[in-house]
Length: 358
Image 1 (tube, rainbow, N blue to C red):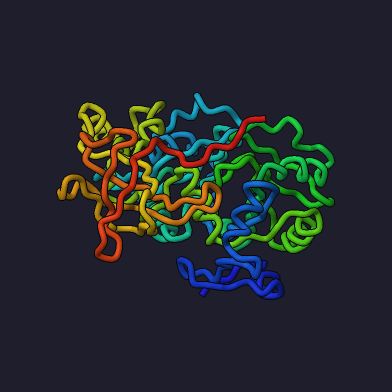
Image 2: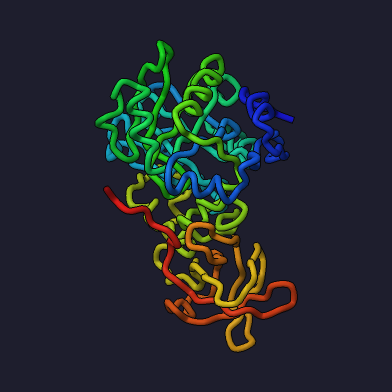
């Protein structure tokens, strides 16, 4: 099993460790998942997300390579900018969701999900574009610092080096005389940054963050936070047969080029009204919906749950589901089958939680 460089640090903090995509990762710390979730919503938390794949693409053909693999027009993406996107093959199968970071036309960074790394890398390397592809996953570490206080603390620790850092922008800076890649992105619905640095430096950075009132958080709270924010998770809201329009990801196709590998598939779905749609659900009855629970209306199955949990932030049980499009009416009352009981829930417009803009 793979271990991140911070594995021993997690164990020193008595984290509960689990197998996640063949990585030994902290699911929670003794404070518990609920408190960790609320730390991030109200203060700041740090997650070790070093299990996520990090691929560097370098070369004169890097631009064409990226535009072939992803629905991205590189000319419309500024240097030092990031874009959320999908990795789709020529058969129209969604392999993963990803974030692309553009340094310049000859250098990019691709962040992919740990559970999909092997499949993604095999597909990505199948293209002969004479580019250099470096897997940085084992030689670097990645931390996500999230929450309303996260930016202020990071600004203080970096000597205000990221004062002008905007959303979905990144900088290469120095922290305590070592280099770090800092990007204003995240997966919690809160503001914050994600930091990539060499393995030799990450333990020092981790401990510095903890000493500055940033709380260690595990993957359990991270999943609750992303669900509250209405964000997708591969294997739940996204899978190989997903229609990106049905899961409300039409926005990722705003800029594409003629050499995009999935352009024919894209044309076929863009011209058709989706038959299903992704929705939010808030339980009226007592119960926690889980993946694959059936959603019914008038005793007829109209969809299924993709993710569900109890939300500490709004103190209600919530779910994301896929339903037949004609039933997508806000405040429509449906029933979710939980442990052989049909419990009532209301359809809502996602997300469940949206941070206040300062």
